Image 1 (spheres, rainbow, N blue to C red):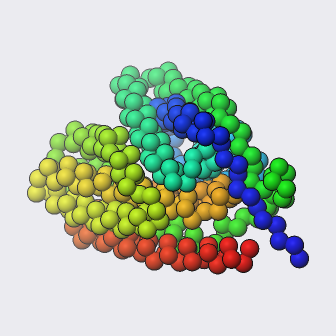
Image 2: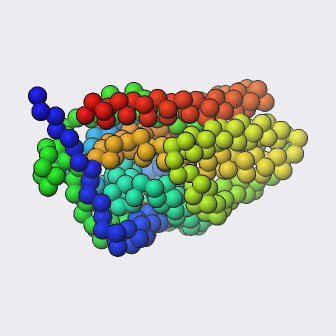
Image 3: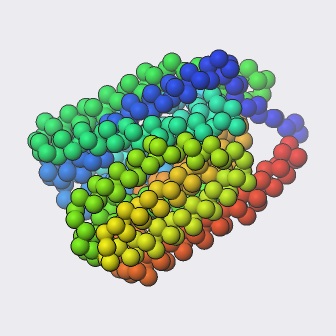
Length: 413
C-alpha cells in the first residue's frame, strides 16, 4: 500500500511577507470597526426595532455560534484543499451578506437563519485567515504576527464601539441600520484587501505531485483535542468584563456605573499597548506552555481581587488589570501552541478546530459564570479562579503528549 505524503503549502516569496502582514492587519481593522459597532448596539436593535423578546435573541445568537462551531473544521479543511485566500475572501463576502440581512429581518425565524449564516461565515473566516497567516509567515514569526493582528482587532473594536455609542444615543432605526451597513461594508473592504495577497498553493495540490487529503484528521487527534479543551476552559474569561462584572457591580457593589466603561478601556488599551511585546517572548512550545500556566495564575489572582470589590471599587480596576495581563499571556501561548502542534498542510482544519473554544466560551460562558459567580459570591469567584489555574497547569503535560504523538506519527509516515 502506497502512502501519500502531503506537502506543506508553498511559502510566499520573502519580499511579500512584510506586505502580506500589513494587508492582513488592514483587512482585520476594516471589519473590526464595524464589528465593534455591531457588538455594542445589535442587542438594542434586535429588541427595540425588530421587537424580539430577550429569550429569542439569546436562542438565536446561541444557535448561530453553535452552528458556526460545527462548521469551523470543514471550512478550515476547505481552505487547506482549495487555498486559504479564496476561501477567506468568499467567507468575508458571506459575512457581509449576513450582516446586511440583519437590517431586513422582522421576525424570529429569519433572525435565526441569519444568525446561523453569520456564525458559519465568521467561524470559517477565522479558520481561513489563520491558515492564510500560516502560509504567509514563517513559523518563528507567527505568534508575533498574530499578536499584531490582535492589537489591530482591539483598536478597530474600540473605534467601532464609539460609533455604536453614537447610534445608541440617537436611538433611531436609521442609526442602527447605518451600523449594519458599516459592518457589511467593512467585510467587503476586507475581502478586497485579502484579494491583494498571493494565492497560496493548496496543501497537497497537483503542483506538489500528491493527491489532496479528504480526511479530517484533526477529529482523530486526541492530544490536540485535549489542548483545545483546556484552552476553551481558559477562554471562559471572555464574558467576565462584558457580562459578569457589570452584573456583579450592579448587585454586589456600590461602584458608579461609569466603572464598567473604565474596565473596558483598561482591557482594550492594555492589549493595544502590550500584546505584541508579550507575544515576542513566546517562541517555542515550552515557552508557550509556561505562558499559559502563568495566565491561569494571573486569572486566579484577578478573580480573588474581584471578590474583594464590595470593599472598594478600586479593586475592580486592579482585577481588570490582572485579568487583561492573563488574557495576553494566554493569547500568546495559545497561538504558538495552535500553530506549532498543527501539521503545516492541515493548518486550516486544525485552526478551525482550535477556534471552537471561542464559540464554546461565547455560548456557555455567560450562563455558567452567572450561576457560579453571582450565585456563589466570594466562593464562586475563588472557584472560578481555581478552575483557571488548574487549566493553565494542565496545558504543559497536554502539550508534551501532543508533541510525542506528533513525533510518532511523523516516524510512521
